[in-house]
Image (tube, rainbow, N blue to C red; front, side, top):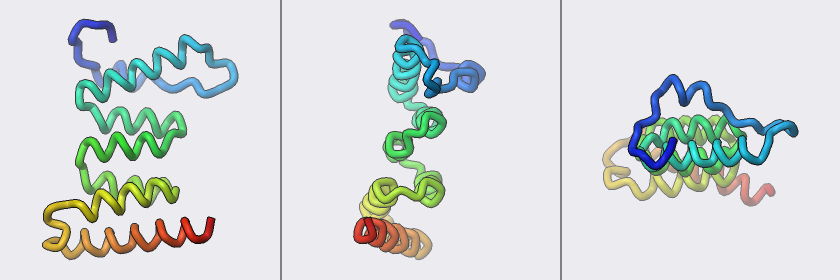
Amino acid sequence: MNSYSRSLQRKLALRISPCIAASATDITLVLFVIFLLRCKKQNSFHLAAKKYTQAGEKLKAMKSLLMSGDTERIIFFANVARQKEVYILAANYLSNLENVHEDEQTVKVCALSATISLSLVSGA
């Protein structure tokens, strides 16, 4: 993870985990952030999302998934995360798809995400 253009290997990525405990040092957190930035630079958005989720950063995880453009994973993650901000991001992404009106399932999911996000906003 230095300035050379080395790609991250999956085995290394799986061994790196966020240290969110009180015993985590500043250097550990800095290295983790550098790792996440490297993932994004190499277009490993799914891997970045996985690591953000492990760190408890669901909103940043969703933003990484949005960069990937993987509609199925975005829908899945929005349903699992159950946070209003995540639902709103997913609904906005789905409503901006070019073929949103061609796929009946996507329209249903988009409407459901918008409804859930609005109910969470009004209920908060």
